[in-house]
Image (cartoon, rainbow, N blue to C red; front, side, top):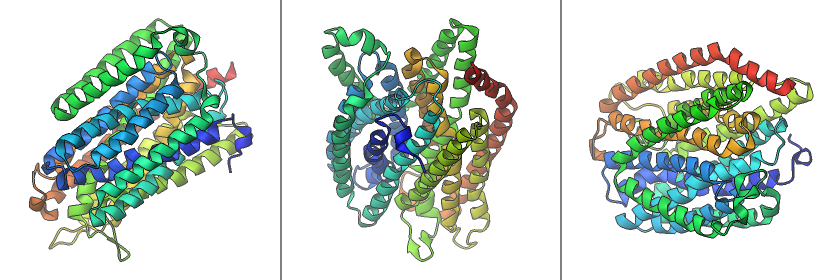
Length: 486
């Protein structure tokens, strides 16, 4: 197993914080879509669109967390504020009133959107630039995040069967409050290192005004986009294009060696978009598939849609720890598996995962169209194996390839990739249910062909991406060899 004595001080605490700070997001991921229709007064298509927009905006604000953290905020300070906002938001979302729910969602996005980049940057800065233990730490941290998800999905599934959503939201608020306590205990270990805030802005009186102004602006911005989710999609795509242009411009001004590292990071981290699409489908289309198209029974145990998500999370936990152990073993033997190869392997696993739904539909009950729930579960388990290769590797790349002065911005870019993937999942989810606005009109026989078409198309796309990444991985891996040989 992993010996924390070999890790910098603060890694263990961040891992534990990760478990509790993700509970709010995980509970919403498992319950939000059905909560909006059952208690929020939204139609099914409105709930699908709003859910996809909500999670995409969350990741769009991750970009701001990365871009602003380390400049106008300390990473540790911004994380503290953002989790406090999430605590308040959970109480607001728990109110069965559409307007308060909307404002609570906006406040949650403001908090959750800003904090993940901060947590990743706090972990990144605990390691020196060439310390390969960083990848091990990120694999463990990714698994810890999913321990929080597993507990949350289990709780969500139980509560969903009783329709007692409020209890889940209050429990999430308690876990978030506990993560604040842990963060304060670890505060001295995660001071910013060599950032603009640490070197200059922390000495300016403007820092007392920048935090409230930015948070208020993000909150107002989030309210507008949640109330008008159709604009959110265009905004995410627009921001994505502008960020790429800006980062390419930044890269062109650097030395040839550093420019090559920047482009390698941008290419590899784009793979996160595939996982993000699956995550967006998970909280809308896949939950709807489990609810309306499966027998919802695994070995005689009733499976609620939120409960099924736990299998992906458990898979990430197991595969994350295994990947960390194997990576540690390779380091001890003086070898390592290059990130380009890891990410290519991860995308390849998605091919197999996407084929599970069409296979289940082929074997479905001919009279009712009902699919065995084992097939979406298999999809999620295989996705978990691919996810840990793609995401944990991508998160660690910032510290490997990017200089400290640019790390916040590039961490944010990674999350904008995720936002784009989730945005795309919204209309796809509505297509899967035939754009029906009422749940009572959704049937397995009516929607199975659409689900089959979607996942076969995704498998074909994954095949193309795997081939592309395989062809360019040798060139990208050579960047890492040169970096670690100097």
